[in-house]
Image (tube, rainbow over all chains, first blue to last red; front, side, top):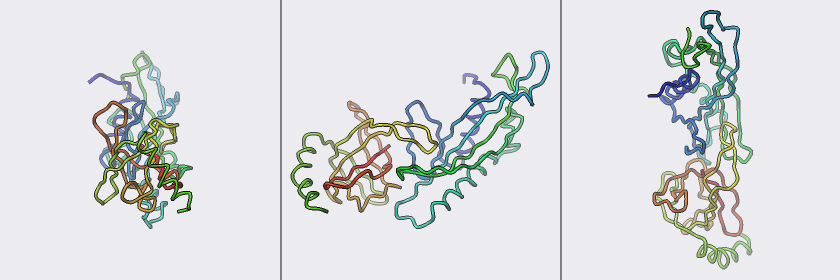
Length: 153
Length: 115
């Protein structure tokens, strides 16, 4: 398999962990997955410089923070009488459990230095088509300044 | 249904279905599927997915508002029902897509967004 940048390797592992509990998708350019109940969509935001974990050296180690997110869809049957917030609460908790269900979950098999759980945001489609939660993570990792494909512990 | 709904469903929509309709399969959750005729608008304007990203919904479809020859808006379960259809004209293999939302149910016609 072609070697990928550390940020991509972390996102692959994130999907693999969530996949053990939910159907988990990362979108292609034109999304082909179905937004159904209990389906999750894994995506990422900005890659922000994190110089608080950068280290001197030759070459130096450059620190980054990757904003990763797992969106869980709550779209039960129209005839379901369970409150939609109940499903959202379960989704948020189960997604976090899936993410942390690994030894030293926060370092992603040595790819990252640490991971912070950020917000669990609510979303509701204005057309009533779907709603759910978005679990956000801040994943801090270090790479060689001259090679973004090599993790530095 | 209103008188207009009855008239439109009885006189106008059949002609539109004859001209523009194609076969799709409706898969109501937990019940037997049925083949019905639908007018399909492929690649309608984008909507937003669960994550707030713009995605391209597969289609908007129009069928009779009927539990036999179409899809009754009363029976529809947008949380669980699926439609099997050709996604791109010229393809031979149909694919099952999810019913996203009931867009309208007037004129004896059920209009659904699927993706």
